[in-house]
Image 1: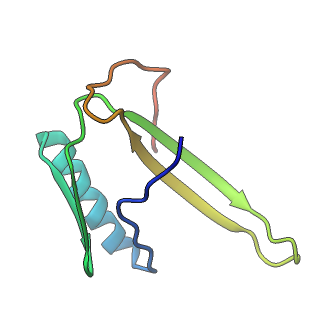
Image 2: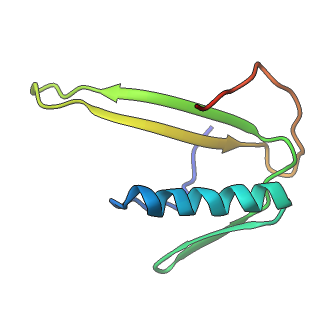
Length: 95
């Protein structure tokens, strides 16, 4: 299935700024409110269903030139457009 990028932004930020963004996302999810992402001339509004699929992934990407590895943590919400989701495959814990 082809992928259409609706919104993308990437920039270095302080941990406190990242935490503030994640807190806002958490508040919108908890309240069941539509989430609007905006940066520059880009903007997209999304209504996350009551039970989206939540993926958490930690990765280490090594450089072929022997440079330092890049570490990342990705949080992803997925759902089928126009459908509410249900189901679970275990318990996630973040400590």
